[in-house]
Length: 401
Image (cartoon, rainbow, N blue to C red; front, side):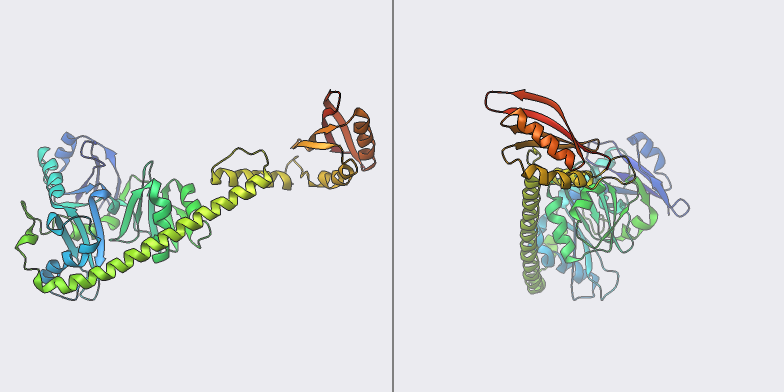
C-alpha cells in the first residue's frame, strides 16, 4: 500500500507532503502546493495529518467485548475528561485484543467535517485523518519529543502522547514523568530545554530524527484509529444510540477519571513548588558568589556560576591557571591591613586585580613590601588621591621562588 501523507499546520498553511509505502519506507516532508498534491494522489491512499490541538487521545477500560457495545459505552466512559458535550464529538476507537484497553481519538464533529471539506475543495479524496503527532517516531524504550518554536509534541507510544505550548511544558512534563517515566527520550529541536527539565532524572537523552522525516513503521499501525472510522455526515450518531444501559459504567469511569485528574493537578502543583524552590536557591547562591551580578534568570545564573567555578579551578591544558594559590598567599597579608578596604576583585591572565581604598599611599607601600615577602609581586596600575583616602588598582601575581 502506498500512502500520500499531507500535513497541515493550519487551514491556510501550504501543505507539507511525503510519500511512503512498502518499497519506500521513509520520506521527508516538503512544502508543496495543492495542484502538485492532486497530481500525486492517483494510486495512493491519502492520509491527512491535522494539528494536535484538534484531536484528543484517550485510553479506557470497557468490559464488553462486543464492538458495537464498546462504541456505545466509550463516550460515557470518557465524558468527565472531555471539555465538550459528547453529542458534539466524534469518537474513533481501536482495541487490539479483548483483554487490552480501548484506544480512542476524539474530535469535534463539525471540525472533522471542516477538514474533509477542505480537501474536497482542492479535489482530493482523503482516506485517513490522524493527529500530526503520529508522524513522530515511536522510540524504543521511551518517548519521542519534537520541540518547535512554539510547541512541544511528545509521543509516548504507538497510540499515546500529548502536545502543548512551550509555556506550559515545564509543568506538564514532570507530572507525565511521575505517571510513567521512560528510560530514554529521543529529542529533536531544543534539546537544551529538555536537558534542563530532565535534570536529576535517570533518563537517557538521545538525538531524535529530523522533524521532517516520517517512517512507515511509525504511521501505518495507527491507520485503524483514523478519525474517519464510523463517521456520519450531519448530526452526531450518538443521538440515535440508547445510552441508558451504559450510564453506570460511565459514572464509575468518570469517578476514576476525576480521581486521576485530582492526583495529576496535585502532582503538578508539587512540581511547580519544587521548581520555584530550586530557582530561589540558585538565585541565593548566585547573589552570594557574584556580588554585583545582574542576571535574573535561574538558568543564566547557573551558567554564570559554572563559568566562575571553571575560572577558579583553572585549566591545566592551557596557560590559564587557577587563582586560588595566589589568593591563599594573599589573604593572610590582607588581614594585616584591616584599614585597607577591598572594593572589587578580578582575575585576568593569571593575575589578580584588586581595587582598594587606603587611608594614604604609605599604607599601600607597606602592603606592597609585605606581599613581596610572601613571593607576591604588587604593582600599582592606577591611583586617585583625595584628602581622606587613596583609591588604587593593584595588580598582584606570583614571583619565582
